[in-house]
Amino acid sequence: MGRRAFRHSVAAIPGRRRSHWTIGVVAAGATRSGSRRIASRSAVDGLPRSGEELPVTLRHLDGRVWLFPGDPDPLAVRPTVAVVADERGSVIVDAGQSPAHAREVRAALASAGLPAPHWLVYTHHHWDHVWGACAWPEVEIVGHESAVALLRAEASRPWSHRYLREQVRENPRLGHSFRARALAVDSWDGFAVLPPTRTFADELTLPTGVVVRHVGGRHAPDSAVVRVPDSGVLLLGDCWYPPPAHLRTPEDGPDLALAASLLDDDVAWFVSAHEEPLRLAEARAALAGG
Image 1 (cartoon, rainbow, N blue to C red):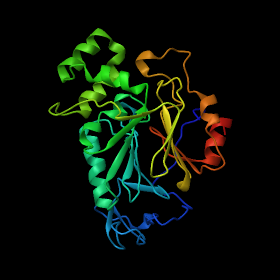
Image 2: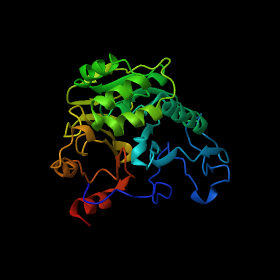
Image 3: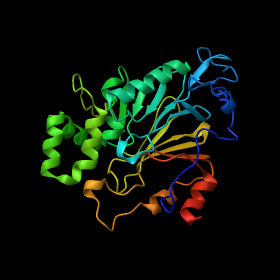
């Protein structure tokens, strides 16, 4: 991962495995209003029925896993948010980069008829993965134990557009990140950085069967991956990326050893937060330089 760009169209994902949660999305059925029609009815009561409209912004990957794709423009710093549907309460993986981003995901979730979320999992503490948390009410926030102190420190900062400008003047290397934050947050009213309310040291399995495992790495010490075993999906967050831009040196690159260690024959899809999803064969080819 990282020897070539991960670029694989989510809009046309062939060969999805089916489960009782699977809803087929017909690519050819895209309407002019930018939505897709549900091709089949789920066996779970409360999910969309045949013929109902599904916003194109929420895309089914496999099994119980849906993706709200990130912005391909790197200047936007807007990662993919994942949804693992479950009748006990959906699991949201990463909060979005802002309350506005989170509200978009919430609207897409409701429009798709997926169960309301009960858990919000942080893959790591960086702003673009956690700043939307204050717009996810009534969820349990799950994160690695080391994220608590990091996010408490972030929560204590006087966030505002003025503060962002001051910080960039003091350290111009923050420019990319802080300009993206200024664009992402249009109002600071009610904004808050929220630490996890449930933590783990090594691994945690949620009641939905979703497994969260700490992997660390160069990008963030609290990085975790999220596995959905019955859907064959591994959500990687940013774990294999180099350090953030303002901390990066010319010698820093992607952590290919960590990426390789996560490959597993039981996983069909590997989803990084700022890349398109890859199938197992594609991930192996990327690591091999193919």
